[in-house]
Amino acid sequence: MPTYVCRVGMGDGAIVTRAFEAPDESALKAEVARLGARLFSVKLAGGGDAPGAAGGARSVLRGLAGLMPRRGHSVKTGEFLVFNQELVALLKAGLPIVNGFDILLERQENPRFKAILKDVRDQLVSGAALSDAFLSHGDVFPRLYATSLKAGERSGEIEKVLRRYLAYQKILGGIRRKVTGALVYPAVLIALSIGLVAILMTYVIPKFREFFAGFEAGRLPLITRMVVGAADFLHAHVLVMAAALAVGGVILSRWKSSDAGGVAWDGFLLRLPLVGTILQQFALSQFSRSLATLVGAGTPLVPALDIASGAVANRRVSGAVAAVVPRVREGAELWRSLEETGSFTSLAVEMIKVGEATGALEEMLTNVSDFYDEAIEARLQRIVTLIEPIILVVMGAVVATILLSIYLPMFTILSNIKA
Image 1 (cartoon, helix red, strand yellow):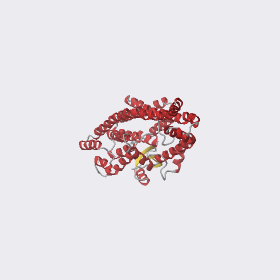
Image 2 (cartoon, helix red, strand yellow):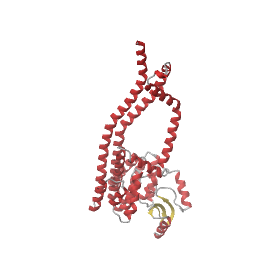
Image 3 (cartoon, one colour):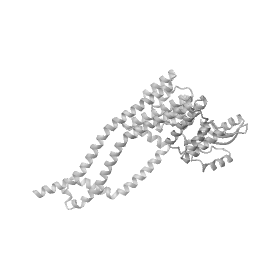
Image 4 (cartoon, helix red, strand yellow):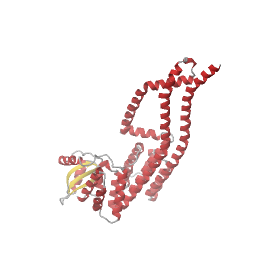
């Protein structure tokens, strides 16, 4: 069910910003009217004016566009986490949230982020809920964050919810750093090897072309003729090949950014040997930890599932989870619905099944994510340990072949001279 962020005038004269869930805009207007309020503007939570929004409100929001960052451009993760850590500290000290925002605004150096926080603070003063104020900025902030805040507002434990969200982000960030750190050395090794081969093929080999030209082609070793021919081809078509690679990269990037292309590409990545297993485990870990965070904060299962599906980076797995939401809403068991997607491992399904049966779904989901986090780290170490010698052997063989193609004719010449 879509979420609409509305600016409404209440019966007491206050103008507030609130988020409403409604199947369509007609139902939304009926809900606002039932509350005895007046609708000034309406936006979809993802950004952009909803059809039928008041023209005057559009003008006001366009005027604010010059002051506010564009929708869909998220704030840097580091800045956002620091802000939340400071906010948690202020809330723990017993400071009212508006006063806390005043203090944090004074310390904020990023003008873009400061403008967003100022707007959130102004909405709080006007009576809006903290979750609705953040939700009104669309995709600037993760939807998981705003929904966690909403659950915290309902339970009166915003500080606890924020701590849970920070823990979630720190764990996720730690996994990403481990993956990146494990892949840095192989990536550098491959890049240096490719660079060395490119220099040999485009600069060194052409230097020997004139030397080899003094010999009959039939007298040159086969390996030399093959390497010289490849070097000549690269030298003659290097610009064409670079242009083709650039155009191909742009086309591939645009295709991957489309819905169908993105799902197809992510599905292809999941089928890759070695790497596919890691990507699937990471997607399952993301889903499990996101859902555990939302369920632990008190979010109902169906909306928590909907949000958790959007927190999964792999679009094939994300789409599979999103398809489960209507079935769970109709009363189907979560574990069975996830099993039928074919995207979840038997281990994840069994642990979720136990969590549903015992009422410990949050704990079981956390165990699933912890298990896959450890499995990802162990598998990455094995892959890196295996791939490093393979890269060295392959690139050593390539370089040795090129050098052999250069020196082999010289050995033949020396032999002929001695003879």
